[in-house]
Length: 417
Ligand code: SAH
Ligand code: SF4
Image 1 (tube, rainbow, N blue to C red):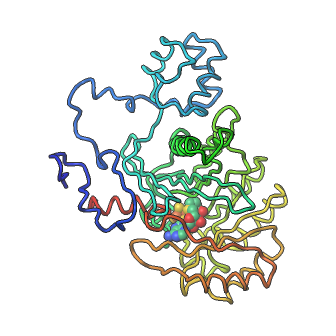
Image 2 (cartoon, protein in one colour):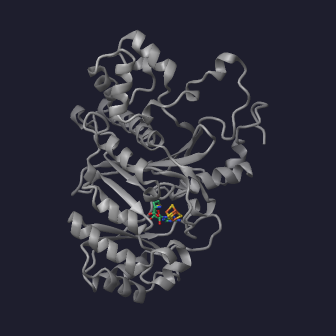
């Protein structure tokens, strides 16, 4: 497919995007498929050919810069520049000497992500980015903006991916239908939050300039959810390392209680997570109250059936003393009857938990329809009979395919790949 504005073979034609609703903002940032051959030797030495410095843990960063002949305190300055000031280039790091910046830029790049698409929903509540990784894999991240609701301050949540694709194959999930590509590295996970933090901070600054916020309210990203593409607990070590970086007080400083990890229900890893002594929130994607129903849409249920999963949840709750969140995607005529709500109520009866009811975001194959709001409220009533608190969560950003894996699915559709 060639671009209608030039001879470049790699841009998606704007005309091909006409199936998108007209009332959203769209920007294609860079070509989507592999870039054409660089025109010169200089171009081929692009920063992205170098390893990303975001792959280094704090300890590794410190030992590396000492080996480069710098004093230890420079590591803290560099760390702050990377994760607190979210500098885009080493040149922007004015606290570091010019020669040090130069040697850093000769050995490392900063972001391992290249943005290829950025969409914002018509109501401006949700933006979604599609990034290309060094090997051509595509991943998605979402920024969700929430206004204050009287109880909670306004906040901005970054929803990030942990794998390119996913091996678990849930039938309602666009990512699951794309298959597994690979685990993301620590740098690739953290870089998503850094990219969204830059956007969030710029928005805060614009509001300060307009007098809509005070200077003290420069917030940026306030929450992170591991609910993008992939299964976080199947990429356990990199996800744990990424949480440490996100949590670092001299960097992004996202409090553990503002971080939520969502899992399809990998029992051994849930038990391991219970021993980590982290204060993060755990969300379990349950989506059915019994094995027969769950196995129809979630192949993982054959490996870790409902009873075993719930036993692991009890152990997790006892060990961590933390409430567990259950995600329940409502699939019309599949798992959304009152009887199923009551069954779910009985299953979760003695657990300290909260259920999020999410009418499904329909995917390309159109296997499932959304449960309407009224039926969702009836389901909520069934849970209430058993004292289980729940929230009906209408998904944000439906008009920009903000559901897990949907933007990548769209992009690949357009390319005809
Ligand atoms: N793999 C993890 C985290 C990523 S998916 C997990 O499954 O929990 C994040 C959430 O999005 C999960 O609760 C998942 O079930 C849900 N989800 C997937 N496809 C969806 C869709 N089409 N509509 C609504 N939610 C969906
Ligand atoms: Fe994977 Fe989660 Fe999608 Fe299931 S819902 S396929 S576990 S990303």
